[in-house]
Amino acid sequence: MKARLNCYFDAGLIKRLDELAARKGLSKSTVVEAAVASFLSPDAADQREAAITRRLDKITRSIERLERDVSIGNEALALFVRFWLTVTPPLPDSAQAAAQAKGRERYEGFVEALGKRLAKGQNFVREVSEELPASVQRVNASAP
Image 1 (cartoon, one colour):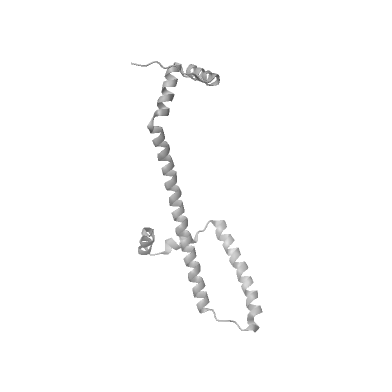
Image 2: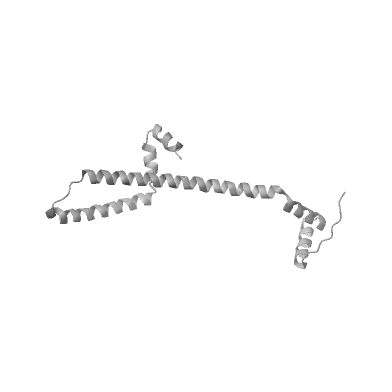
């Protein structure tokens, strides 16, 4: 049994309802009933929530990968700086100018090599992950 309900709609909305009902070959009551049922359905809200949850999970995994990559980069840089400071002897004043010139030359080579790697899409973190023994990879994967 269906109950009767009288509703008032804006004239523009009534026109759109008439066009849709005619195009679909349905009565206006059927179209309005389906629209109200869809609006009241908890499934629509659940579907939106599930889609948002999936997107948030994907973003969370991306952020976790970024955190891991930044940590690896920070550790690599810190290790290099500690090693470099430990093994590099101080230069006498007479050798400073030549060392600075050589340093500029090496830096330019570094920037050029970095540009080439980036252009090729090479990734240091991926290379390090491939070179790590499996036991170290398992420990890193389980770390929070």
